[in-house]
Length: 210
Image 1 (tube, rainbow, N blue to C red):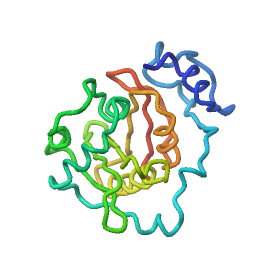
Image 2: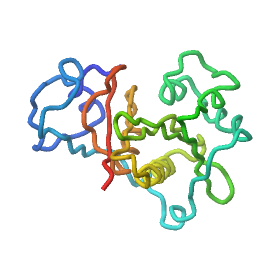
Image 3: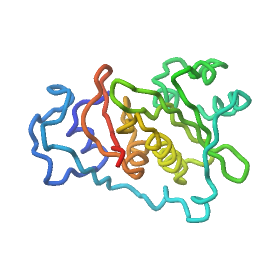
């Protein structure tokens, strides 16, 4: 997992600007929250050109509520043990046939991103009432359409869904594995890396509702 915040940043060529105080050298080991005033601005040195949607593609991609008929389709997108681990911390690949159905709960709203009548990505919003928040979870993109910006588009649209609710002050994302592409997706969607997760070791990103 994460060997330390600086090590993770260095591994993927990500620079932290001078606004970071540097207090708490190893955030993951020594702190559950970044020091006051130490909100991070992360500038990934990654090829965003490969992840950008054209204006035409961007405008035609939209979300619809998930229905059970797409269970096998979404499960099929979990095409490797690495993806299974990144999406839901899965350990034994291939995943169970009912894995996507098992994610559906009363406090979860699930969505598919569609373009030209075809599903391209899946994710959920989990209610976090104690935090006045919703959490984006189980984000996965059709393998043949990865690195085209559809993950970023889905996260943006899920943020809009959460921001429209009167009981939501922020939208959260928890990352439990080192995944440069996922981190880039979340940062492009306007999220900021703000600290570490509360239970399982990982990174937390937040976008506040304005």
